[in-house]
Length: 127
Image: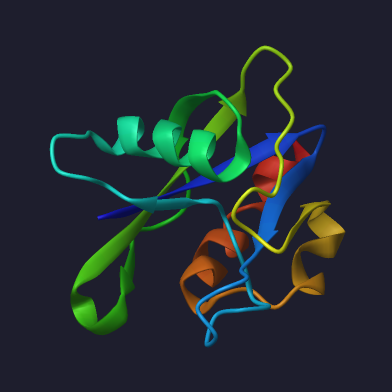
């Protein structure tokens, strides 16, 4: 299982630009990663947000559909998360980050797995 975070603040969602591997570099995604043995999905997502963005989060409800990944070996599951205590994300493991409004969602080249999640965002961004 792969988990990812949709972080929405003031009507904008955080998007992260991959720096690797070469076939994904320059494409955009929601931060997250693999659920490790012994972790729940929510624990994994909180850990990934600390590692990738340097932030503490409260994991909320699911966002969008489950997305099958590479050759059916994994599934991407996305959750809405809230930043805690004024934490500000940093691009610790990504090339760059952007806060996108609903009108900017199509301004970056998303990884294919994230496209169905992007489609679910307009109602959340319009509040």
